[in-house]
Image (cartoon, rainbow, N blue to C red; front, side, top):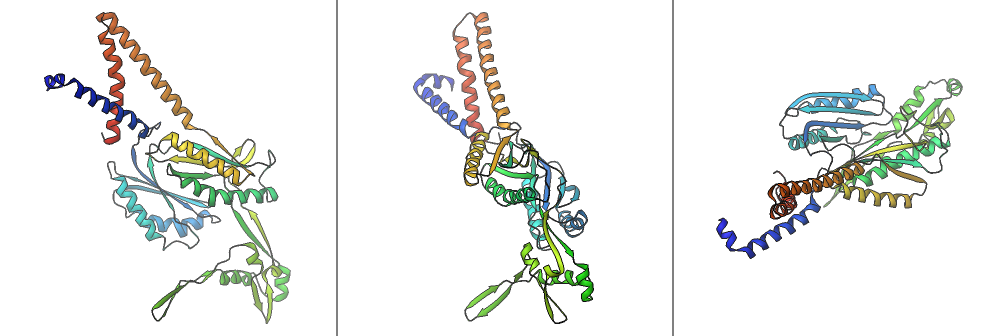
Length: 391
């Protein structure tokens, strides 16, 4: 075999050049991360329930979800935690389990459990744990014209920050997660609004009724009926009845009939909208802020992720000149430093190896062999990694 190769120097040279070119091209397609992509047998379910207490979440959401998730095969342990406005379920599985199949099974259980949850609860997030789930960087969102050092109070500043929180939850996080390089955008520091109804007891007493009149009025008007199917000849129409209360103005204008007289709810109570006191505060440049942790896809390149995020931030700040987005705790800088350090070490090692061989062998051919062998080996290794990822 070797004699044949030596007898065909042109064919061997052309083959090596082709392999080297393919290796150089494939280097641009290999994802680079600080940690190897290792599946951890753990899955986390995150539930968002704004405005609900921990006891209510545990009773109406957490217990029902855990009842479904305990049926997943390979489950070793399951732990549920209920907090105000949110809940978390952590599941660990037996080592060696097929995490991709388990992930599909957990999502199927989530789809079944949605029928048992309250209607105002969105679909819980199912997160598959991995060693690469360390956030690539964080994005801090602040208001440009906010006073430095201002605290969150039910004032104009607090209302504007509540609007910012709503924008980050409903718009910004969705646009970030639409990027192909992003696996998850984890939000911290948001505040949520609440509507406080204070009954006018003097008015209610003069009417001879209690607080139950207001409670029943809100319950009777906050309904969501199932859809109705109507068939007319060859056509079938689906009609959905939705009478849910969505804002302060609708509550104020609720009509209450009592002893032949019609009242508006705002005549019997004081309705105010304010933010729920936050359990923690995030500061960015001495301003109240919201932090978004960016977790990249396992097969995404860090440079592509950073470029996409920078482009998105530029567009967002043009569309919304009142907000400021700052990238902090950027892991791409540490990754670039590590890669540069590795490159310099490889070059230094090759130079030292050539010098040692030259001093011992007293021949220029052997050092030249090392100079060509090391980079060609690395290039071919990159090519094998692209075409055979499991190797």
